[in-house]
Image (cartoon, rainbow, N blue to C red; front, side, top):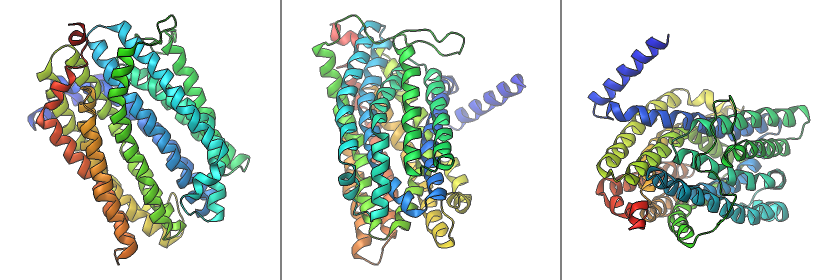
Length: 476
């Protein structure tokens, strides 16, 4: 059986090379890094999708609408963490590729400190003013109550999630995606199990979904922390980090903090641009009622599941491009970036085609009334098509991130989401386009940034940017 799988893999690699998608020699390192991250992404994205489906069964559209509003704030948490972790993976991969492990460890330590500093105020806001936060959407009383409950119960997980993202990106930066897959995917499975028990067994509704997220996210933090301080996992197949958190000073170095903030700030802005646009989108959807809010969220969750491919492709692009730049192999770094972008598009087109074929049955997992299923199925279909743009965006932006070039991708995200997508959605409020404005926004918010970031990658300026952060450059 193993021989047959190897033969099939070799055939696929040869076919992809013949089609000009990616060189066979570069495919294996890409797949080795990407597949555990893709599994991790599917597991993590599925937990919120499963929560939405379970809440829909147990509570109804008022519960799913409230959960949609609350998940918009959770997305802000994730985007802040991903932005900071983006600076982490860039510096860790380049320093690790340049054999500067001590400096890479210092980057990780300072990233952890920054993550704690960012997460504590957010957790406090979830605990202290949940009603005011959910009320910004103009939610009805039932949806307001459900959304506020979720924020209170999920507040402790804010700190856990940012620490998990730093740990995950550290492992990616050193080329180990298996360890984080085991921890994060295991936590995601635990999340679904706990949520099901709390929602149905204890009849806790939305609170049960939040509690399941908090407990499982804390579990992942404990597991990853074990390896991040250099401890062995024994025979589990997981490895301790080769760039562990520094326990004996110095904990701070001005140059490392400067580089980390310089790279992370635009990446945080780019990620926040992705997350914040959800707020006006949900506000616009809320003007059409909770059924449209639920349908929009179903489309977003399905698209997020498809985008799990980017968990692998985007991070493989960042890691491989960063490592080859750290070794002063600019041409090879560019070849990896180009190949991963093309490979990502092939994957997204195939997945989108499958989702389009089964859009209605997928929608039926979340809602039950025929009119609700029809509307949700349309959002699922549009979301699947728009995901192809995410494939281009994630892989191209990942390559730029590996080089430390994060400023222009921020501009690309702002242009796509706020100059194109949001105005398109708003058209539905003042023209007969109606809900169709949200469909158009779904497409514009991915294809416009994707096109711009791919153009930036092809332009090649990122190679010059990377020279500012390479260890040998700093040493000279």
